[in-house]
Length: 126
Length: 369
Image 1: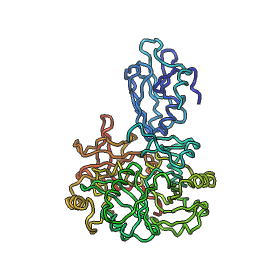
Image 2: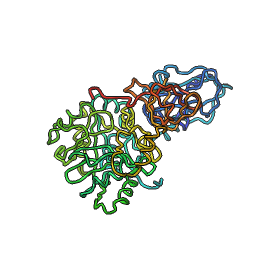
Image 3: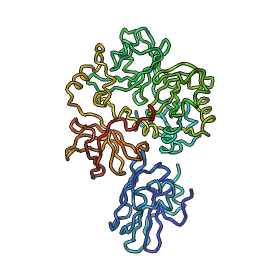
Image 4: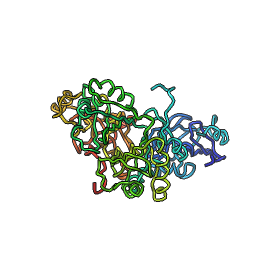
């Protein structure tokens, strides 16, 4: 699966879509493929303030627990509640129905330190 | 093993790579942890059948008049009473009763085959060699020469029978036979580690690819799936089977692991006998229990277990259990007072306590078994 060109990425394999003041966060197709069957996701709570690049949750596959790092800082305004009962949505559609949480950016500025899709393509290889 | 030791390849390594398996280090070998996905592979074994490469496991041939009485001094179960072509689970212990390895003995025609865990293969070879004494027993290490392919699942008999030269249906559980599979010489055993009916095929390393390819060629279109170590671990845990390094270790005894059925205290002296007898009679030991978790958070090895705010032990294995409707299951080594069926315990996961209920093992039994 190609990594969408309209998203920004981290080297820890998260993606972020920035639309105005709001950012939607997920994990990449490479990440879900590497993890295998995802069985549990612990997300930050709505209303929490989170800092860029900090660990804000976990993604658990059958075999492993992985920290979830946020590509952007701000206030969590929504989490994807369908993942409580269907964490495998992240395996099926990591850039769509498997999104994780939404953040309102603190200062409205574009976050720094993120990768373009072409930069990310170069590191997301086996 | 040092990090710089190159990983060994089984005879089927190139098959795994060609099938797109994700390879991981295990017991000194590069082994497939999954192909299509652990859940899909698990489903194939419970509903149809799966194909496993177990060639990483240690295989040792024992020969000589005194194999049975000699090996009985090193193990907890009976060996001399095994019938020709019978297979039997057995555990080698240390003097304190901890498990040195858990194994299967196969009584073949004129020789015995001992299958040991990959992670313990070198340790076990040294252990056997050091205890040979004047027994006259001869050891042959088949490491790297003999392959082991397992076909496991309810359709195993139907799918394997047309390709062997013996009456597979009459082969009883935990018995074996020597014959041919797709024309290749094999020891065919009705044994396994998944909780399903199935067969384990000991074939020469040079024949392994032909047998593996033929089974997939003939039955993949009916739903036979190659399965990796991930599915194997999920299947064995559902079936309540111990995995060395988890439910059994040099510190965790067979008595603690709930394997006293394999402990024959009426045998003459064997390594660990006194310690195990004292532990069993004292009845104060910590023990392995089955846990079913409330909620969706998986319990994993090393997590602490609590009873009424007291730390009573730790999780030894954990997995999602598709056979239990997707609940999370675990084994835990807990103190006696916590090991009551139906007891409510708590597992600490990232600083939060999650309710778990003690249940009887195994978690899963196959229908009509």
